[in-house]
Length: 336
Image 1 (cartoon, rainbow, N blue to C red):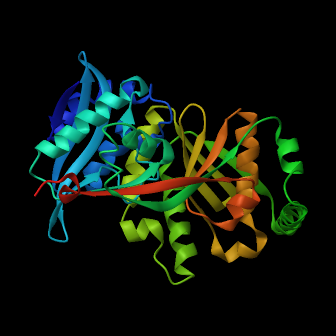
Image 2 (cartoon, rainbow, N blue to C red):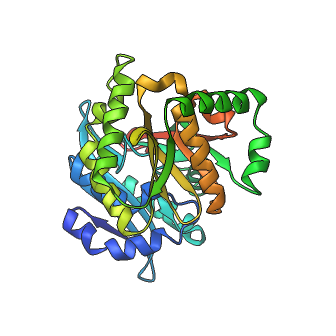
Protein backbone atom coordinates (compact mmCIF):
# COMPACT_ATOMS: atom_id res chain seq x y z
CA UNK A 1 0.00 0.00 0.00
CA UNK A 2 1.59 3.25 -1.17
CA UNK A 3 0.70 6.65 0.29
CA UNK A 4 0.82 9.86 -1.71
CA UNK A 5 0.47 13.18 0.15
CA UNK A 6 -0.84 16.08 -1.94
CA UNK A 7 -0.35 19.51 -0.41
CA UNK A 8 -1.29 21.89 -3.24
CA UNK A 9 -4.63 22.74 -4.82
CA UNK A 10 -3.06 22.27 -8.24
CA UNK A 11 -2.14 18.73 -7.23
CA UNK A 12 -5.77 18.04 -6.32
CA UNK A 13 -6.95 19.38 -9.66
CA UNK A 14 -4.55 17.02 -11.42
CA UNK A 15 -6.11 13.94 -9.82
CA UNK A 16 -9.68 15.26 -9.98
CA UNK A 17 -10.84 12.93 -12.75
CA UNK A 18 -9.29 9.85 -11.17
CA UNK A 19 -10.62 10.86 -7.74
CA UNK A 20 -14.15 11.34 -9.10
CA UNK A 21 -14.08 7.94 -10.83
CA UNK A 22 -12.81 6.23 -7.68
CA UNK A 23 -15.30 7.97 -5.38
CA UNK A 24 -18.20 6.75 -7.51
CA UNK A 25 -17.13 3.11 -6.95
CA UNK A 26 -17.18 3.30 -3.14
CA UNK A 27 -20.35 2.03 -1.52
CA UNK A 28 -22.02 4.52 0.80
CA UNK A 29 -20.50 7.57 -0.83
CA UNK A 30 -22.48 10.81 -0.85
CA UNK A 31 -22.22 14.06 -2.83
CA UNK A 32 -20.34 15.59 0.11
CA UNK A 33 -17.31 13.35 -0.50
CA UNK A 34 -17.07 14.20 -4.21
CA UNK A 35 -14.35 16.41 -5.73
CA UNK A 36 -17.09 18.78 -6.91
CA UNK A 37 -18.11 19.47 -3.33
CA UNK A 38 -14.72 19.34 -1.59
CA UNK A 39 -12.70 21.35 -4.11
CA UNK A 40 -15.38 24.05 -4.11
CA UNK A 41 -15.40 23.97 -0.30
CA UNK A 42 -11.64 24.48 -0.22
CA UNK A 43 -11.81 27.48 -2.57
CA UNK A 44 -14.33 29.18 -0.29
CA UNK A 45 -13.43 28.02 3.21
CA UNK A 46 -10.01 26.38 3.11
CA UNK A 47 -7.29 27.56 5.46
CA UNK A 48 -3.93 26.29 6.60
CA UNK A 49 -2.18 23.61 4.54
CA UNK A 50 -3.67 20.86 2.42
CA UNK A 51 -2.81 17.33 3.51
CA UNK A 52 -4.67 15.09 1.06
CA UNK A 53 -3.81 11.44 1.66
CA UNK A 54 -4.17 9.22 -1.42
CA UNK A 55 -3.63 5.50 -0.87
CA UNK A 56 -2.71 3.33 -3.84
CA UNK A 57 -2.62 -0.40 -4.38
CA UNK A 58 -0.58 -1.24 -7.50
CA UNK A 59 -0.99 2.38 -8.68
CA UNK A 60 -4.81 2.30 -8.47
CA UNK A 61 -6.60 4.44 -5.87
CA UNK A 62 -7.60 2.45 -2.80
CA UNK A 63 -8.54 5.26 -0.45
CA UNK A 64 -8.77 9.04 -0.13
CA UNK A 65 -8.55 10.88 3.19
CA UNK A 66 -8.90 14.63 2.40
CA UNK A 67 -7.30 16.53 5.29
CA UNK A 68 -5.89 19.95 5.97
CA UNK A 69 -3.63 21.09 8.79
CA UNK A 70 -4.31 24.36 10.59
CA UNK A 71 -3.75 26.07 13.91
CA UNK A 72 -6.68 25.75 16.30
CA UNK A 73 -6.61 26.70 19.97
CA UNK A 74 -2.82 26.65 19.97
CA UNK A 75 -2.52 23.17 18.44
CA UNK A 76 -1.77 21.85 14.96
CA UNK A 77 -4.99 20.16 13.97
CA UNK A 78 -5.72 17.75 11.13
CA UNK A 79 -9.32 18.30 9.99
CA UNK A 80 -11.37 16.69 7.25
CA UNK A 81 -12.02 18.93 4.25
CA UNK A 82 -15.67 19.93 4.12
CA UNK A 83 -16.04 20.33 7.88
CA UNK A 84 -18.70 22.71 9.10
CA UNK A 85 -21.21 22.73 6.26
CA UNK A 86 -21.06 19.13 5.02
CA UNK A 87 -23.22 16.34 6.39
CA UNK A 88 -21.23 13.21 5.52
CA UNK A 89 -17.44 13.27 5.75
CA UNK A 90 -16.33 9.65 6.08
CA UNK A 91 -13.22 9.08 3.93
CA UNK A 92 -13.70 7.07 0.74
CA UNK A 93 -11.95 3.70 1.14
CA UNK A 94 -12.34 0.68 -1.14
CA UNK A 95 -13.75 -2.15 1.03
CA UNK A 96 -11.31 -4.72 -0.32
CA UNK A 97 -8.37 -2.54 0.79
CA UNK A 98 -9.82 -1.17 4.03
CA UNK A 99 -7.47 -3.03 6.39
CA UNK A 100 -4.34 -2.04 4.47
CA UNK A 101 -5.43 1.59 4.14
CA UNK A 102 -6.21 1.92 7.86
CA UNK A 103 -2.87 0.37 8.82
CA UNK A 104 -1.02 2.69 6.43
CA UNK A 105 -2.95 5.66 7.84
CA UNK A 106 -1.96 4.66 11.36
CA UNK A 107 1.70 4.45 10.32
CA UNK A 108 1.49 7.86 8.68
CA UNK A 109 0.11 9.45 11.85
CA UNK A 110 2.75 7.76 14.01
CA UNK A 111 5.62 8.78 11.73
CA UNK A 112 4.48 12.40 11.12
CA UNK A 113 5.54 15.05 13.61
CA UNK A 114 3.61 17.99 12.14
CA UNK A 115 0.29 17.51 13.96
CA UNK A 116 -0.99 17.54 17.54
CA UNK A 117 -4.62 16.49 17.21
CA UNK A 118 -7.03 14.98 14.66
CA UNK A 119 -10.65 16.12 14.90
CA UNK A 120 -12.78 14.29 12.36
CA UNK A 121 -16.53 14.90 12.40
CA UNK A 122 -19.72 13.81 10.61
CA UNK A 123 -18.64 10.22 10.07
CA UNK A 124 -21.10 7.33 9.84
CA UNK A 125 -21.10 4.07 11.77
CA UNK A 126 -19.53 2.15 8.87
CA UNK A 127 -16.59 4.53 8.72
CA UNK A 128 -16.01 4.28 12.46
CA UNK A 129 -16.23 0.48 12.29
CA UNK A 130 -13.70 0.50 9.47
CA UNK A 131 -11.29 2.71 11.36
CA UNK A 132 -11.57 0.45 14.39
CA UNK A 133 -11.37 -2.80 12.44
CA UNK A 134 -7.64 -3.08 12.05
CA UNK A 135 -4.36 -2.19 13.70
CA UNK A 136 -5.64 -3.35 17.08
CA UNK A 137 -8.21 -0.55 17.05
CA UNK A 138 -5.21 1.74 16.85
CA UNK A 139 -7.29 4.76 15.93
CA UNK A 140 -10.72 4.62 17.54
CA UNK A 141 -9.66 2.33 20.37
CA UNK A 142 -7.49 5.03 21.90
CA UNK A 143 -9.09 8.16 20.52
CA UNK A 144 -12.17 9.87 21.89
CA UNK A 145 -15.40 8.95 20.14
CA UNK A 146 -18.53 11.11 20.52
CA UNK A 147 -21.94 11.05 18.91
CA UNK A 148 -22.31 13.90 16.46
CA UNK A 149 -25.48 15.55 15.17
CA UNK A 150 -27.38 12.72 13.42
CA UNK A 151 -28.86 12.68 9.94
CA UNK A 152 -32.08 10.98 8.86
CA UNK A 153 -33.58 9.35 5.79
CA UNK A 154 -36.85 8.11 4.34
CA UNK A 155 -36.53 4.84 2.46
CA UNK A 156 -38.69 4.94 -0.66
CA UNK A 157 -40.23 1.73 -1.93
CA UNK A 158 -43.53 0.77 -3.50
CA UNK A 159 -45.92 3.53 -4.52
CA UNK A 160 -46.38 7.01 -3.12
CA UNK A 161 -50.05 6.45 -2.27
CA UNK A 162 -49.15 3.47 -0.10
CA UNK A 163 -46.41 5.45 1.64
CA UNK A 164 -48.74 8.39 2.29
CA UNK A 165 -51.52 6.15 3.62
CA UNK A 166 -49.14 5.00 6.36
CA UNK A 167 -48.46 8.51 7.65
CA UNK A 168 -50.36 9.71 10.70
CA UNK A 169 -53.95 10.90 10.38
CA UNK A 170 -52.94 14.24 11.91
CA UNK A 171 -50.27 14.86 9.28
CA UNK A 172 -52.56 13.92 6.40
CA UNK A 173 -55.46 15.96 7.78
CA UNK A 174 -53.32 19.03 8.46
CA UNK A 175 -51.71 18.96 5.04
CA UNK A 176 -55.12 18.71 3.40
CA UNK A 177 -56.39 21.61 5.50
CA UNK A 178 -53.31 23.71 4.65
CA UNK A 179 -53.84 22.98 0.99
CA UNK A 180 -57.49 24.09 1.06
CA UNK A 181 -56.57 27.36 2.77
CA UNK A 182 -53.72 28.00 0.35
CA UNK A 183 -55.85 27.34 -2.74
CA UNK A 184 -58.26 30.03 -1.53
CA UNK A 185 -55.48 32.62 -1.79
CA UNK A 186 -54.43 31.74 -5.34
CA UNK A 187 -53.11 29.00 -7.63
CA UNK A 188 -50.29 26.81 -6.24
CA UNK A 189 -47.64 25.45 -8.60
CA UNK A 190 -44.93 22.88 -7.89
CA UNK A 191 -41.84 22.53 -10.06
CA UNK A 192 -38.47 20.79 -10.22
CA UNK A 193 -35.41 21.91 -12.14
CA UNK A 194 -31.99 20.36 -12.71
CA UNK A 195 -30.51 23.76 -13.58
CA UNK A 196 -28.49 26.00 -11.28
CA UNK A 197 -31.04 28.78 -11.73
CA UNK A 198 -29.48 31.89 -10.18
CA UNK A 199 -32.86 33.44 -9.47
CA UNK A 200 -34.08 30.37 -7.58
CA UNK A 201 -30.86 30.11 -5.57
CA UNK A 202 -31.18 33.80 -4.67
CA UNK A 203 -34.75 33.12 -3.50
CA UNK A 204 -33.57 30.16 -1.42
CA UNK A 205 -30.92 32.28 0.30
CA UNK A 206 -33.33 35.19 0.84
CA UNK A 207 -36.17 33.08 2.25
CA UNK A 208 -33.77 31.12 4.43
CA UNK A 209 -32.53 34.39 5.92
CA UNK A 210 -36.07 35.72 6.36
CA UNK A 211 -37.25 32.54 8.07
CA UNK A 212 -34.43 32.46 10.62
CA UNK A 213 -34.39 36.24 10.99
CA UNK A 214 -37.97 36.05 12.24
CA UNK A 215 -36.63 33.89 15.10
CA UNK A 216 -33.79 36.29 15.82
CA UNK A 217 -31.14 33.99 14.35
CA UNK A 218 -28.91 34.39 11.28
CA UNK A 219 -29.49 30.91 9.82
CA UNK A 220 -26.88 28.56 8.37
CA UNK A 221 -26.19 30.44 5.13
CA UNK A 222 -25.60 33.80 6.81
CA UNK A 223 -23.70 32.31 9.77
CA UNK A 224 -21.31 30.44 7.49
CA UNK A 225 -21.32 33.05 4.71
CA UNK A 226 -21.94 30.21 2.32
CA UNK A 227 -24.14 31.89 -0.28
CA UNK A 228 -21.44 32.13 -2.96
CA UNK A 229 -20.31 28.60 -2.19
CA UNK A 230 -23.86 27.34 -2.69
CA UNK A 231 -24.15 29.09 -6.05
CA UNK A 232 -20.85 27.65 -7.27
CA UNK A 233 -21.39 24.10 -6.04
CA UNK A 234 -24.87 24.08 -7.58
CA UNK A 235 -23.23 24.76 -10.94
CA UNK A 236 -20.74 21.95 -10.36
CA UNK A 237 -23.54 19.45 -9.68
CA UNK A 238 -25.64 20.74 -12.58
CA UNK A 239 -22.81 19.81 -14.94
CA UNK A 240 -22.97 16.23 -13.65
CA UNK A 241 -26.76 16.13 -13.82
CA UNK A 242 -27.01 15.73 -10.06
CA UNK A 243 -28.65 19.01 -9.02
CA UNK A 244 -32.32 19.24 -8.03
CA UNK A 245 -34.16 22.40 -6.96
CA UNK A 246 -37.77 22.00 -5.80
CA UNK A 247 -40.01 25.06 -5.62
CA UNK A 248 -43.58 25.89 -4.67
CA UNK A 249 -45.12 29.06 -6.07
CA UNK A 250 -48.17 31.05 -5.05
CA UNK A 251 -49.47 33.36 -7.77
CA UNK A 252 -46.08 32.96 -9.46
CA UNK A 253 -43.99 33.93 -6.41
CA UNK A 254 -41.74 31.36 -4.67
CA UNK A 255 -43.09 30.60 -1.19
CA UNK A 256 -41.12 27.42 -0.41
CA UNK A 257 -37.93 26.01 -1.94
CA UNK A 258 -35.28 23.39 -1.35
CA UNK A 259 -32.02 22.34 -2.98
CA UNK A 260 -30.78 18.78 -3.09
CA UNK A 261 -28.16 16.60 -4.70
CA UNK A 262 -28.86 13.28 -6.35
CA UNK A 263 -26.20 10.57 -6.29
CA UNK A 264 -27.82 8.41 -8.94
CA UNK A 265 -29.78 6.47 -6.32
CA UNK A 266 -30.99 8.73 -3.53
CA UNK A 267 -31.65 12.43 -3.04
CA UNK A 268 -29.80 14.43 -0.38
CA UNK A 269 -31.98 17.38 0.63
CA UNK A 270 -29.38 19.93 1.72
CA UNK A 271 -31.19 23.20 2.41
CA UNK A 272 -34.81 24.35 2.43
CA UNK A 273 -36.71 27.52 3.21
CA UNK A 274 -40.21 28.95 3.12
CA UNK A 275 -41.68 32.43 3.22
CA UNK A 276 -42.38 33.15 6.92
CA UNK A 277 -45.27 35.45 5.96
CA UNK A 278 -47.24 32.36 4.94
CA UNK A 279 -46.16 30.01 7.72
CA UNK A 280 -49.79 29.40 8.73
CA UNK A 281 -50.41 27.87 5.28
CA UNK A 282 -47.79 25.13 5.79
CA UNK A 283 -45.99 25.66 2.48
CA UNK A 284 -42.84 23.99 3.79
CA UNK A 285 -44.66 20.71 4.41
CA UNK A 286 -46.61 21.02 1.16
CA UNK A 287 -43.31 21.36 -0.71
CA UNK A 288 -41.93 18.25 0.99
CA UNK A 289 -45.10 16.31 0.16
CA UNK A 290 -44.87 17.23 -3.54
CA UNK A 291 -41.11 16.60 -3.61
CA UNK A 292 -41.55 13.13 -2.15
CA UNK A 293 -44.23 12.36 -4.70
CA UNK A 294 -41.75 13.38 -7.41
CA UNK A 295 -39.03 11.21 -5.80
CA UNK A 296 -41.37 8.20 -5.90
CA UNK A 297 -42.21 8.87 -9.53
CA UNK A 298 -38.50 9.04 -10.39
CA UNK A 299 -37.86 5.82 -8.44
CA UNK A 300 -35.33 7.33 -6.04
CA UNK A 301 -34.37 4.79 -3.38
CA UNK A 302 -34.37 7.30 -0.50
CA UNK A 303 -34.86 10.89 0.55
CA UNK A 304 -32.00 11.88 2.85
CA UNK A 305 -32.65 14.89 5.08
CA UNK A 306 -28.98 15.29 5.98
CA UNK A 307 -28.19 16.72 9.41
CA UNK A 308 -30.74 17.56 12.12
CA UNK A 309 -33.49 15.97 14.21
CA UNK A 310 -36.44 18.23 13.48
CA UNK A 311 -39.73 16.54 14.38
CA UNK A 312 -41.33 17.04 10.96
CA UNK A 313 -38.75 14.74 9.35
CA UNK A 314 -39.82 11.82 11.51
CA UNK A 315 -43.52 12.56 11.01
CA UNK A 316 -42.82 12.01 7.29
CA UNK A 317 -41.26 8.63 8.07
CA UNK A 318 -37.54 9.38 8.40
CA UNK A 319 -35.23 7.03 10.29
CA UNK A 320 -32.32 8.31 12.35
CA UNK A 321 -28.76 7.86 11.05
CA UNK A 322 -26.14 8.04 13.80
CA UNK A 323 -23.05 10.18 13.17
CA UNK A 324 -19.79 10.36 15.09
CA UNK A 325 -16.81 12.59 15.80
CA UNK A 326 -13.38 11.07 16.34
CA UNK A 327 -10.74 13.03 18.26
CA UNK A 328 -7.22 11.64 18.36
CA UNK A 329 -4.17 13.26 19.97
CA UNK A 330 -0.54 12.43 19.30
CA UNK A 331 -0.26 11.51 22.96
CA UNK A 332 -2.95 8.87 22.42
CA UNK A 333 -0.56 7.11 20.06
CA UNK A 334 2.21 7.17 22.64
CA UNK A 335 4.06 9.95 20.80
CA UNK A 336 5.50 12.86 22.75
